[in-house]
Length: 221
Image 1 (tube, one colour):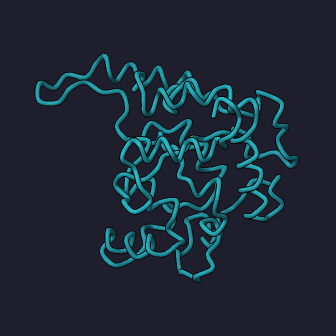
Image 2: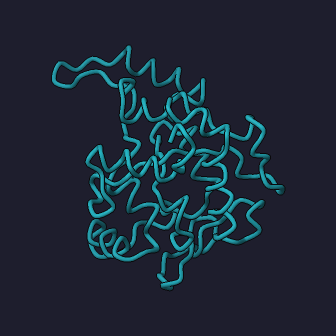
């Protein structure tokens, strides 16, 4: 990898496997980072401009300074002899909250999701329906610090409701179907994954990637 003979995607998959993670186990599914931070612009993010990239030296919970203060206040004021003090009430990778959440449009994840929800899909407003909304929640809500799955960089199918599942309608009247993509993707899931993958393989992401690996798999856990 240091010699440029291995892609960042393959490098991360290799590290995930060494860490005991597998795409055959939703409880130990491979983890990938958010790379871009612009999901609202009309034009494709400039992959040579750092302002378009998430800071990979920090965990998701530390990207928003105001939210980080809230996390720290909770940690410092937490008093319960039976539970150690904690900052984050959720995890960056879980079977239900991340793997099944993102991949609910694919088999066998859809079936597993419905099993978990008593035979039906979750409430429409809680389903994965928009890339921009999801990133906003993961960087602002106290309940969300999700990272991503390999599909975000390799498999456009997870963004399309090609199976025709009935996900219902949200409270604002919007019907849940295909995932709402950033404007710069031009409505194409393939284009979105292509640009996302290019961002992952960019020089800026490559430079920061070791810091994120240390956060998830290494001494900064």
